[in-house]
Image 1 (tube, rainbow, N blue to C red):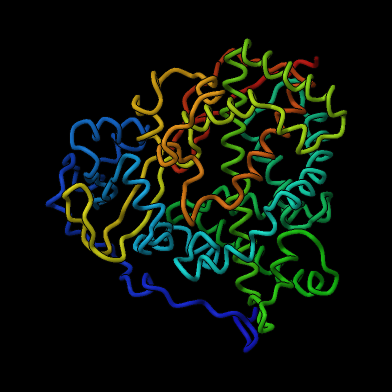
Image 2: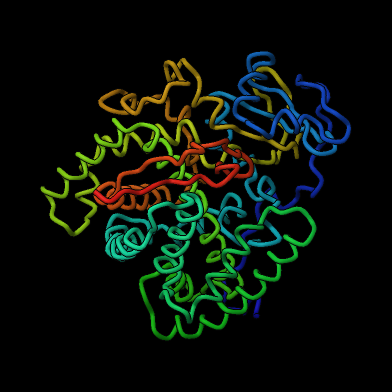
Length: 453
């Protein structure tokens, strides 16, 4: 695979390039719970990071440290002011590339692993694929896939497994321009293997992920010439044929890195949100009926063909989506690395310090969300929104999730078809326990019973 040619757009040098791989460990002056020399605070931290951080915030304030493996300290910044400082990042001081370094072996050039001017350039390349006109095209593509998938679901399903399968298929077909069927089964299988094991520690699972990554890169590279010749409206083709005003395009490596990165970002977090929403609907029959009635009314007004206009007339469904994200943000942590030293609430944080933000630190703050433990979608209906940096399930600032509106469209489209055709009920084992790291998902399979309406 070629890395670049004289006509390729080269990576822009940015300040975070100078950071050392090893994060700064000179953090003993900051408050925080003591940690074990081997596992730090991980045993308390990992079962439910949001709850743990809220407890530590009450004890230590909005700036403290916790220890991970080897008791390597991480700086936790909490509250809307912290979220604004780090995510808005007016001074280009917080590196996403080094924060998400764990992904670099698999997707080194994806947009999430680019910083500052380099990131802004590559993000602009993809923005047209998420404008309203493009989203309307995507919905036309998604609707028959959703209908057929839900039609073939059995009476009892492992809800997370089925949501992952459906969102992966839509990511490959909408973003990748691939058709379904047996011809692309190896591609689907390799994507699933890579994404299921992308954060695995060294061992057999990581080896399988890297092997799947290499096969995927080879497959996507073999598609590039066809995409450049035939054109298309999917993200893969858009990146393959893009050129700037000087006639420069993306290297093959950059196109493939972006494509793999989008497959990673576009399906697992959406599957997480769909799973928690489905569980909450099964647990709340009254809300399930309210959303079902709202979907029926929208279908009566807009007809059987699903459109963005129809989905825009689902305020209760949208509120249910937001409230579920408030309680169960798919990503519990937003990592960054400080390029230069800075101060926050009187505390000195040195350069190259690892920074973690936690959406749940503000999502459960009673100042912004009264009775935060209570599930109440109505808090998002006909009410003034909270501080924009208090509700951050998709992040904020320049690195805010590029596919945010696509994800909301996809989730509501799936729920629309599901609620119009099925009644959701939990199996006898109930909803079980959630696993929060690296992504919110059931710790064990959750069986959802689907009764035809």
